Image 1 (cartoon, rainbow, N blue to C red):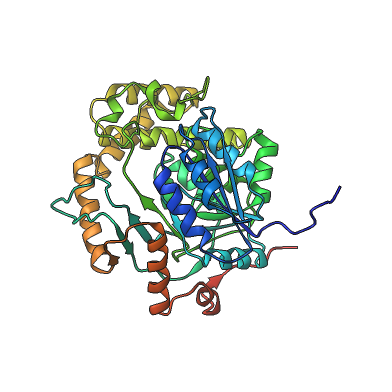
Image 2 (image 1 turned 120 degrees about the vertical axis):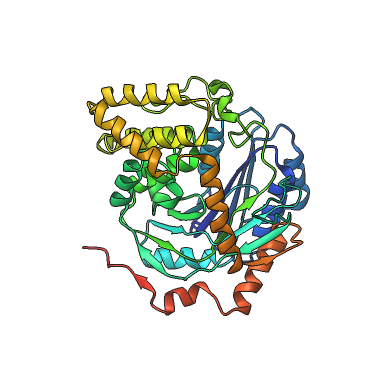
Length: 418
């Protein structure tokens, strides 16, 4: 029996997809156009039809491509677990089936390996809006389907203190986790060893109700050396939103048990500190706490600010004040914290919000208008292959490159202690 002694690929780009065939095909096409042999593309398909499998069998003959179709309905978490299980790269980058990458991401993985980084997170500056999203123009924004936007970026690379960021996140009620400098595999690079440590500890790579939140927290618990870069290494895409997601208007008033996070999941134990409300924030915080408990970090669970979480939910969504406050007071009792002081912090959170969702939405739109003035936009971009090509041309034409991010010595990393 011959043993394959070839080294593993440097980078696995991993996609877990279901029922979004055209977007997945475009992602596959765009990534496999990268000629670097250090790349591996992994697609785990759990679609109801075999259309993507048929396309792959008839069109893809690339040895760097690993594909698996599982017909049995899987939960979102199980689909992600199967996807990472299929990969073999030294570093892993998770993206959605409507996303893409900058080919320089392989160069970034090579540099991360040299620097002995467990994680290189990306502060996003490029975004792609697919044609046919159904979004409409408003008073504040001109929405154009098929557009790539590239915001200004510094190219700087910073070392990040994961322990400090974890504490800050949960003291903020577990909210806005994308604004914190965590070790993110979703649109970031993470050493495979970190995933294996999580699996050894918990039995799986992913858990909770939201795979991206769970992995960000779990990886941040095990990663020793991490950095973040302000440079577009990936391209987050936005396509038509499914009807059964929590982004639908007034989805928070739907039955909690109907959330797609529980589909094909079996019995799921929800965190007793998080309100059972059909909103994205609840699923993110539930997953964050699930990750902490699975990784044995109950000390960080104690840092969770229930008043801040409650103030955000009450201020942002109508008709759920009573269950939110009831959950907050119950949680304060279970964690032996003062209900009176907690209520004072809740009131302060409502006042300092701004609590009203409309006011916050208007303010965010104003900030968006300001950023759009300094943002370069490409219109009539038909798919992710063209999107990746446009981004590469833009970077080349303006003299930007990942290598320059390193050469210009905008790096502030301490050597690992021996």
